[in-house]
Length: 197
Image 1 (cartoon, rainbow, N blue to C red):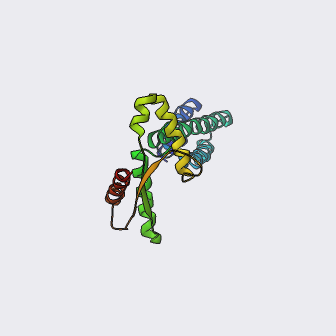
Image 2 (cartoon, helix red, strand yellow; image 1 turned 90 degrees about the vertical axis):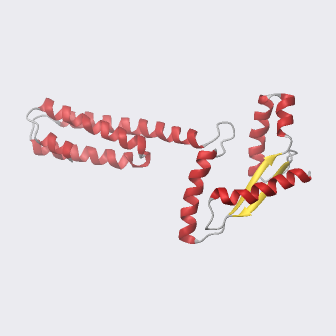
Image 3 (cartoon, helix red, strand yellow; image 1 turned 120 degrees about the vertical axis):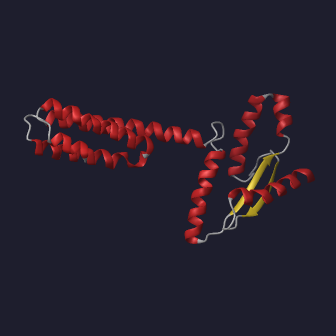
């Protein structure tokens, strides 16, 4: 709003254009930190800038409005895409695409909030590949990486027609527990299953 006010008070075309570039930086900020909101924000910026130019009553400002609109929409699209990509990389394992610790904590936080609203039951499973260290030691890390990628597909299909052995422990996640508290009995059950093998 302040930037729009400054545009309406610009005495020259150049002054209005200089003030207008603050809109680009605002859009970059929104796109980086709120990637889902950049498009409505960019459209709002374009409309508000157009209205401010009309109020400023400066001559031949259509080109400036068009340039700013293109700049805002282009920068917003690029920055939001990079932001989403970076957020995805920070929350998932590069090799398997599974959630890493940070991604799991965020998913658990969102799930916990949803559970409070609809009181849905949740069961958590802790899974571990049996003998994985021996596979890594014998075949190298590349072999272990290939096995992890195969294992992800296997676990997604719940072991349908695949020879890799795995152990699991499960626990019901009560509404009064944190994810870490729920994982403790699942992890104990997992280790008991591994020990039994």
